[in-house]
Image (cartoon, rainbow, N blue to C red; front, side):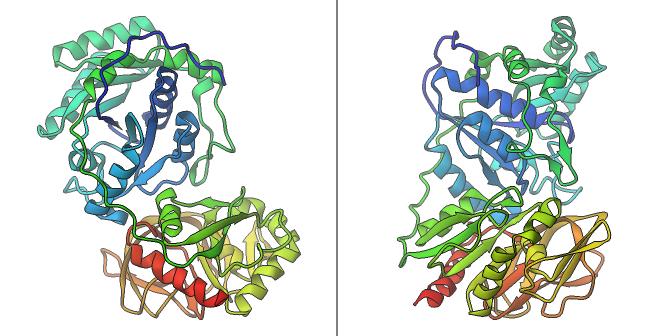
Length: 457
């Protein structure tokens, strides 16, 4: 990978963090955040990227650009105090923290409050905000949008603007003249360039393993970032020291599915499992013949099983290995795509493709997207929570069961009063469309690992 040579003078050391926010989705936050991470590295700075919200895909692009694993920050899933702890822990290992926002600056769970929005998180972390504004087809109006975003919450520290999809230096100068009138500095601009386009799939951007941008285009774009001014503008107060992780319990081997079909995992959740004694052994349901030896549990995260359904089905030995493991009492935790894989079959384009047959469920793909945060209650004791326990998670999927669940794990009530029962929980198997964050509450990981240890005892 080619990168620009460091030519700018150094900036005094100190904590720096920045939240990149926008007026709406589609403004180019991921592109600009990745470019910023990429541009800072040649200066010898350790850059820690973060993604606000539950998104699994945008962080892969930030990880590639920063050379350091991106972390998700979601105040709904994690809670405010736990979020601050996990942020402080990761940020302490870096010189600059780059936080990519979600949707528009003030868009959260409820249109009447800022709760769980990008602005809410910036205030929680006492982090300056840099606005990423799509300047395509406008000039002076960019200043009106920026001014409105800044003044909507006067207690929010808006440090400046990065202009995106700019036609050229002349266009950038027009926008900057207007922004000068409202007292907002331009901290860089990114030209409109098809080489920076990141392709999408039905769940959002393709992951960085599946899609790349033009490296020369990235170098050209990064040259427009005013790094010296930006670094000066994003100094922030030190964060309190994060508490040390709890002492690890007895070690236990856990198989983690990780390949093109399954890769939606939160790094902080995996870290929590590791801190509590899990030795995570990655395996591929697509290519490996069987589960790793000596494991007490299996983690099947979300991903794209529908895109690899025939290959997954053709790996008969792996399907039999997982089915035998579950039948013998092994602990199996599956989310979303993992649920689809554990089922009897997956309907792809009208064809029922055989899956593992661990749970008596059948799924099919639909054009309709199911998404949203869930305040769920455990209907029965599961691998991660006792009956009656409250958990928080999120859904994001295009597949559905072709029938009602027979042993649902969770229930929740929607804003309109609709009650949903979802998932499958029986014995040592938990499968659900609900994505949990095992790093949110150490008790979730502890309960799962205790079940794994019992298998190998």
